[in-house]
Amino acid sequence: MKLRKQVTVCGGAIFCVAVFSLYLMLDRVQHDPARRQILQNRIEQLEQLLEENHQIISHIKDSVMELTDTGAVSPSGHLPFRSANGSWVLPFDGRPAFLAVKPQDCQFAVGSRTQTDVQMLDVYSLLKFDNPDGGVWKQGFDITYEPDEWDNEPLQVFVVPHSHNDPGWVKTFDKYFTDQTQHILNNMVVKLAEDPRRKFIWSEISFFSKWWETADVYKQEAMRKLILGGQLEIVTGGWVMTDEANAHYFAMIDQLIEGHQWLEINLGITPRSGWAVDPFGHSATMPYLLKRANLTSMLIQRIHYSIKKHFASTRSLEFMWRQAWGEWTGASDVFRFFFFYCSSSDSFKHEPNHRPDILKRGILKVHTAISNSFLLSFEKALNGCQ
Image (cartoon, rainbow, N blue to C red; front, side):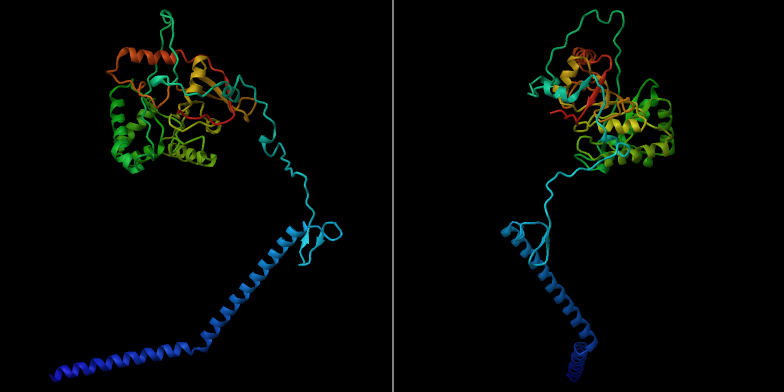
């Protein structure tokens, strides 16, 4: 009982000392004249700035009201004049402003002298874009050919195995790589090594570089051998298969530099052909940039099937692409080929067990749609398949 009383007394004493100490500390802080003076000065400065701001806003309001009421005309009817609030009212110069650009400063200041066989703006005016139902091929026109057309010169068929890998779509970049891309590249190395006649192309260096980092030295050496031997070709070689119609050219250049630098540092190669099968529309800027990167040929895919039908019917899917604002000498021309089908269809996905007549129809469609190249100028981006 006595011990409990002692503990209670001691606890109460400690509590009283703590409360008293806290009181003294607060009292000292409140009566610190130096700190109170600093705080007071800052408050006064804020009040002064606030008052000046109110005055400025008031002057602006008065000037706007005066201009609205009087039409900004002085009593004598001449401009400029000084208003009652001290501001100057200047005369309005209604003449249009021009900016002179010297031709040596910017080549786009010179009118285009491009000479082409086909101008895409003229082609657009010929097409209805009425989206007829042409079945899985979308273009909706019959395929005709002569039975003896290849008696003297057999038709050559080019098979290009390829796998397009989006760095970001339904899955994340890492999820795509883990679930699919790494297996595609691993199997590709094995299958190409089994038969030297087999070919493959790859485009996205973002995935390729990640695979390279995870592969052992034996796989890396096998991949390098396939590239140097011509069985594997890197096409475009950008970090991604960039969009073209809605992407800024800064971003298009940046991703191209990123991919080409990786290829140069790790493999010592430079792509020579472009491969664009999935951008949502194509821009004349892309071939201009790729030509500057030393690419000589390109392939595009996502074009509205009305445009594809038009060019296929005239056997003009092969052409030299020149920008309407490009160099008239042809220095920016790039050989370009349209894929003849819309990527949304399933009929072009030929598997080994597909019926021969379906495969034959697809091959004939290619043959009846291509011919000698010609010069084509694109003023604007082409719309993708609908």
